[in-house]
Length: 180
Image 1 (cartoon, rainbow, N blue to C red):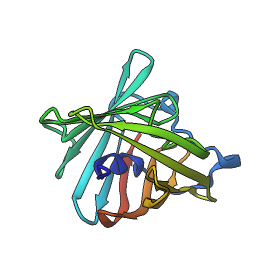
Image 2: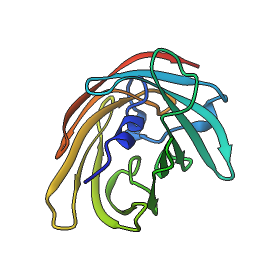
Image 3: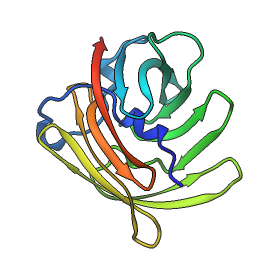
Image 4: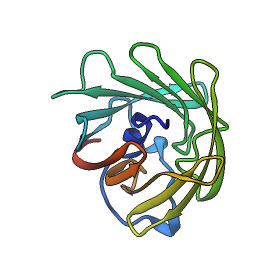
């Protein structure tokens, strides 16, 4: 089963035209503490806060509720393009991605999701740029569609409003506000 929370982070900001199919997340344009707030149709309000660098990678802490304070519900380690490397819940449950989860890689991309019990799940993701962001389809090793969605992104590459659907059901995301 594909975890849904990583999709939340895929959904971080506002719609605007994406120049020349550039769907890259742009951490070089962010300051520590910048964040976006998104309402999720199934899980309520969440705030994704840029928390700075960890080596060559970047950290996003995600908080549920009215404000981006307290203990993060989950933390995500991203590469410079916005692809997931590690996703970890507050209780320590961690998922790793090799080489990454292909979130911001245009075209066909394969990756492996590694769960805490060392279970390895292979995915293929096909991502295409749209006028306002990107859309994608993920299939399992048998080629069966498991997840698809369409996400809007802003000039910083943060995702905002959009929708995803798959074996877990459907969910919409609505950008509430940005704090840059």
